[in-house]
Length: 258
Ligand SMILES: NC(=O)c1ccc[n+]([C@@H]2O[C@H](COP(=O)([O-])OP(=O)(O)OC[C@H]3O[C@@H](n4cnc5c(N)ncnc54)[C@H](O)[C@@H]3O)[C@@H](O)[C@H]2O)c1
Image (cartoon, rainbow, N blue to C red; front, side):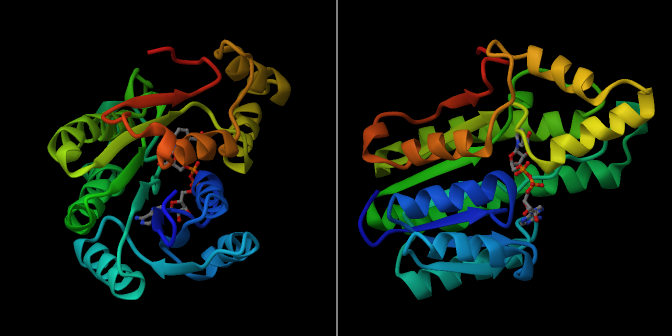
């Protein structure tokens, strides 16, 4: 990564975003974590600072245009430039058949997962253009490529993120700004373990059996770690991926192959 460079990572307080913050810091960037609650970002700050890099948490709701404008303005004032942007913040949205999804739930899911990346890019791209350099990575999902029944708002948002990624890549390529999407499969961690536990309680089936079913959906028969996703983001921010843009790349242990 570029020396003295700055990365903004949205939703970096925990999970995949936290691993991305640490990976980009290891590769040499100062990291700004933009998430909902500054207290929750304390652990990420500590982990990033252990690498010797600077980390600044900043309270931001990516669904709010005012918040996003203020955050980007603050980062540019404080650091002078933004070379890397990772749009990772996302919510699962409701689990319900389409006819039972409320308009509020639909709007909330799209506001965070799709409007969020758009607003972040709208504010950051002019600064990247001014430097003739930028690397943007949008965290989509394998659900951005294939249906996931009972999750229409989430699927629509992630499919939208892939379309947004391709279109923005075509707009800004001549300014040496690359825009790619990363599509994780099921990531191991507390969130998915809670889902398996809930399904086990609801169905009376064994936890390991439920987990095994999900693992077998992938060619490698396993889940993905958040570090696997962070590694690919790091590569897409490195000098080794200069001519990769407008792509949507799976990290799914072979669950989805297109
Ligand atoms: N975990 C998975 O299995 C999986 C699979 C595919 C894609 N993804 C995607 O990866 C990304 C990260 O997922 P995760 O599992 O680490 O999630 P997570 O819930 O563990 O973390 C998401 C983070 O985003 C933050 N956030 C939520 N709404 C926000 C908002 N409006 N503004 C700013 N920050 C906000 C949360 O506070 C949290 O810190 C998401 O976009 C998700 O859709 C996850």
